[in-house]
Length: 110
Image (cartoon, rainbow, N blue to C red; front, top):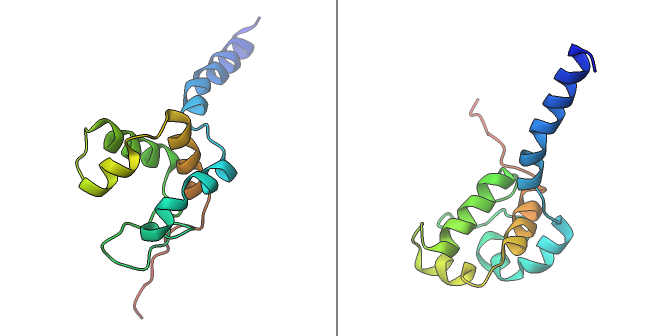
């Protein structure tokens, strides 16, 4: 293996852990997120300002946040309860669903 092939191989292999973290099935996530829809909306675009908009957020951020709620590292009475029984696969699927949705857009005043 020459130097270029080695560099390419090492680069590709270094991407594997990041890809594993981004696993998740968006279709399953939609089905698993039905309780979330009441506050965050089916596509993650909540209509009430007190509930964060999740649509288009980064999947890794959503996964970490849900894990933190589930594990008690982040406190919110509502979210701690809703996430308490989620498996890692559930969390990845739900995060994949909301991450796959239309994201927030910036509106500029003229």
